[in-house]
Amino acid sequence: MGDPLQGGDPIFIGGIDFGVVALVVLKVLIGFTFVMVGVIFMIWFERKLIADMQNRIGPNRAGKWGLLQTLADGIKLIFKEDLMPNKADRLVFRLAPYLTVAPAFLTFTIVPIGGLFGTGENGTIEVFGYRTFVQVADPPIGVLFLLAMSSVAVYGVMLAGWSSGSKYPLLGSVRASAQMVSYEAALGLSVVAVVLLTGSLSTHDIVSAQSGGFADWNIWRTGVVPFLVFCIAATAELNRPPFDLVEAEQELVGGFHTEYSSMRFGMFYLAEFMNTITMSAIIVTLFLGGPDGPSLFGPDIIWPTIWFMGKLFIFLFTFVWLRATLPRFRYDQLMDLGWKRLIPLSLAWLLVIGAIRIADDEGWNVALVIGISLASCVVGALALVGASRAGRIRRRAEEALR
Amino acid sequence: MVAQNIAFGVLAAATSLAAIRVVTTRNVVHAALYLVVVLASVGALYILLTAEFVAAVQILVYVGAIVVLLLFGVMLTKATLGEDDQLDNDQRWLGAVIALFLLGTLSFVLVDAFGDDKLPSLEGVSRATLEAQRGSGAVGDAIFSTFLVPFEVVSVLLLAALVGAIVLARRD
Image (cartoon, rainbow over all chains, first blue to last red):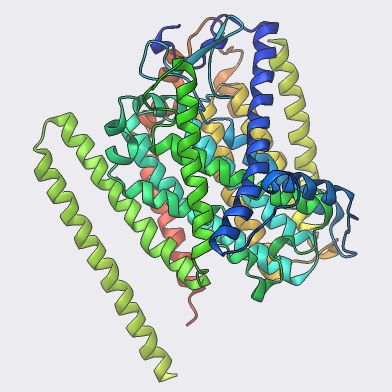
């Protein structure tokens, strides 16, 4: 069971022997299979659900309800001719799809997908005589790893567009990477609220701290705002509608992957859905208690995974729903939302949470502290609005003079 | 310790080779990509030293932000595909001299400061102890107590750079 203060995956406590290595490899394989199977069904689910929402039938030929459609598409993609533009930078052109897929999967490794938390077992299960966490890895810097991977993911998009040696992909990739870089800031700032409350960067500890039941979930403890900011920033980071400016067909043909065909295109497609699943899993982990939930009947050990899947499914459904219903943002609106709304909002909220935390530690009057910090946030917001309005008026005046 | 030594050798070789390619390649985007390899390998070296926090920040800041900005600059100004003979100029010898001087200074400082010191063995040290000694919490405490003044100076410097960039980029 291991001393809870020991920290880290108990599998490594007794030293590393052959069994430990084999088990870690097995965990990696299970994680990879989980994501790949998830992607296959997610693609089918998205197409079918959008078809339903748009009063169409959708895929219905391959297998029952078209369930095997993705497999059929995959086989087709593999057998298609692999085109490479004459002006392409060959090495980088080949490298880019892998750079997109790898971070998508690596991020998933830090997500706990099961295990009973809040009991003596502390999120571990026993497999072949070893106790281990139900996640591929639990680095002590978990959340930073998430942010690092999401910033590395920019490279795939950026290099794909540049190496194609053609104008539209380059424009698409510059647009996409600018969007991803801008929203990373809001993403990071909203995660800080969670880290501040937990006092740890490890995803296992973050889930552990939320194991007291529904009221202990971070979405409530951080006061909903960071959750909303994270969800919006995550949607933008994923380049999904309503932030899918990357694929604005009217303006950019097909975006950064215009020149890609065959399985190289397939990998971008795969990475997009892999990222959607990973991001949903991260939202569930950070804000909704991860695998936390009551055991209803039968063996206790299966319930955390069922709860995790259920919460994951809600987010996957929402992402598809957003795509089916919302029109696309304009580019300046997208940048306005990111830089002028989400970043100041999450910074201000961070200030309030930090103030509450200190007031708690020092025994100050919490209500007064909340009042003062909210008041200073309002003053700051007014100053920001005033400054941006004054700037706009001055710009107009200067333009009129010209 | 054998595994660590082998890993160090591989990483050091990768870092050095990629670093040489950064300055010898004639394609500016390739140079940036080799720079990514250098910076990421340095991050991996930090992980070998069990400094995960520094490693994650290295990837986040250098690989995820600085080189991305560099690539942005290249792509938005002159995204020439293929080789470019204008990348090199006659100042390379001056550059080489400065680089050698820097190498000498840094080596001297390291040898002078640490000499024959060995890192304490991590055999049997629990992760909780490690975290308390050199985890992100320890780094944060050090920054906001011992190194508070340098930290604040760097923040002001970055702010000045930010304001300067906006002033330079304004249209008027």
